Length: 424
Image (cartoon, rainbow, N blue to C red; front, side):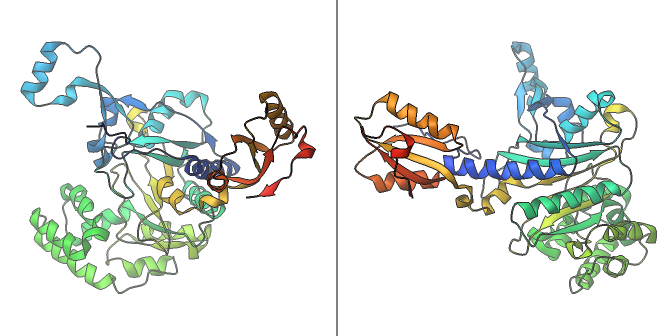
């Protein structure tokens, strides 16, 4: 039986047209973020296993790929098997996001960086997901982060840069769903959940878009959450689902929350409308963001044509302090590149200065390379292909790869001026 020749599950090959679309999108993202004052960095694909499992990555830590130590002694293998803990055999792991590596990077290079550091990271990450449409085991993240800016300027810059980048990509109509982890905590306190219950309650509430309000309430009851608090949350769900939380501002946020949430927190969150078009911001009291390291404002990209988020982020002031031993303000945003690139049209990659030369078998290598060299010198992208009987199929493939024109080359074609260039 023939062996399967597909990529590993949850990982993909990209044909030339797909790769061209991806690179075009990445180029737009890089150019836009750079224009907003961010600098690109690069970190290793692996980090120490202890760092990846230090409680900074939330549920994603459970999805990390571990890398075995080299030359493991037999006694260590037997010990791990006896204790049922394979993790002790690993010392490294593939990164599951770019935020944990960034925190380590900043701690390592703080003395070489400006007091407020604006970073771009665009790179693949790996998670042991159950592969399905839209979920992969290897995918690209496009992050921007501001480290060292404690004021709301960081959120304002990051959201502004992200909205501008989405516009450059041609994804008009995007808005930012926004909340604050401190507001969420205050809500849970008002409902009557104990502080020890907060993490699990938030994990369940984060499933609201998948299992609905009744599903959240049922799961919390099954988990043994404080009954009176669950009742209060249930009543809240039924009250707010009929409300509109726009235009973004103090009034809308207050209307969407239970009585008793600190007014200063509400005012701080609403102040974002002073620097960002409030029509682009939508308050969502149920937005959680699953990562446990968020400490303040959290946000996600929404588009009216899609039920899923196109990216998200927030403030994570406590993470870098884990490495430095002192608090450092941090805020970041990650574009969901794999989802966004699927929305872009591949034909937008085509360029009119990409020329396919279909040559006769009798054309000499010297002749063909000479023509190609002349065209490339004039700024034209050139591909040589031997002409076949099925010319239409050749032209279709070339067009899918971004070629907009073609010309035939015969032994009588001696210079660029002899070419009869035609559109594909």
